[in-house]
Amino acid sequence: MTTMATDRVWDTDQTLLCERLAERLHHQGVAHPVAAAVALAVRGDLGCDRRGFAARLGLDPAVVEAADAGQVALADLPAPIVLAARHAIHLDLDRLAVIAQRYEHTPAG
Amino acid sequence: MVPIERDEVARLMAQMAAGDQSAVFVFIASFGGRLAGVVRRQLFEFGRRDVAADRHELDYLVQSAAFALLDRAAGWSPDGALPWTWAERAIRAEVVAYLGHPSVELDPDHAEGAGIRRGAGTDRSGPRRVGGAGRVGTGPDGAGGPVTPDPDEFDDLVARHPTVALLDEAIEAVANARDRRVHLEYRLQKRSGDVSPAHTVAAEFGLSPANVRQIDSRVRRRLVALVEADDRYAGLRGLGWLAA
Image 1 (cartoon, rainbow over the protein chains, first blue to last red):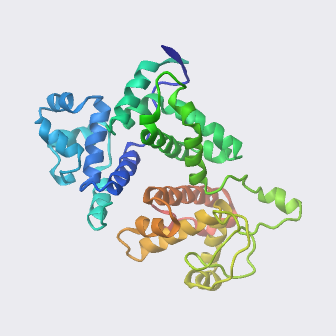
Image 2: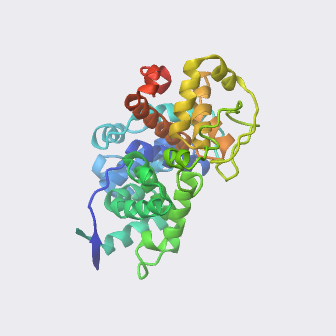
């Protein structure tokens, strides 16, 4: 079923969206909320489920699951995710790294 | 006009309902225009065409609307209204929280013509506190009401230094009382070496850190535009305070 929309793609500030998602994840007690938000952003951009995402980037599905869940620090994210974050969706990883550092000093939850 | 795929809407809402937060990125890319339409209409109702016309602020609110849907996705039915219609009240709450208070901005020119002085804007009869103990305004955001005199360091600087006084005047010209306080506190915290100024200020004002940064960014953008456009503020051109 269809109805009408006024446009197709909304060009959002992806870095800000990551930052805000990370904020929510931090409140949910996620250990590495910024890294999780980055992984989710890249997967969201590709429109894949975890298994499809892992296959597409040549990663172990368990690694993707850990990244999604915020069990991997930003500095330890797999290179294909970091490359996609930087070059495909143009995330400002330097700005996000600063925010990630701040969360390390702020209790989660 | 292009067709909305209701199946795509349902798929993404189901994904969000299942806890997959990556869907929010796709949802905004695909349906951000629809969310923007709802947000824009609500901003018009509040008389905030200025916010609606600012792409950065509109985008922030589109993201807020998407998060409102993310939080409520489990309650949505694909047989009912489209999500942004179904969640319009929740989106409205996000808009209200962002604006601080649903009010029409006072037009200073109109107010002066009518013999009215802006409570938080142009009344310079006494010192005002930037944060904490000093309470401004009568509404939830403190906009538009009287200001409790409560001297502090910033007010002392305003009194002593013409440039600081001019800066304070410019800030008052572009921001409501809450945004002025958030901006000042954030900038002062940042300059004093606080490693997490947004978190510090967010806790004080009951906002999220991202919202604090957004408010600061908004006030700075407006300040820069004012200073460039109005020669009364020429003395502020090139001031480090206006830089990110």
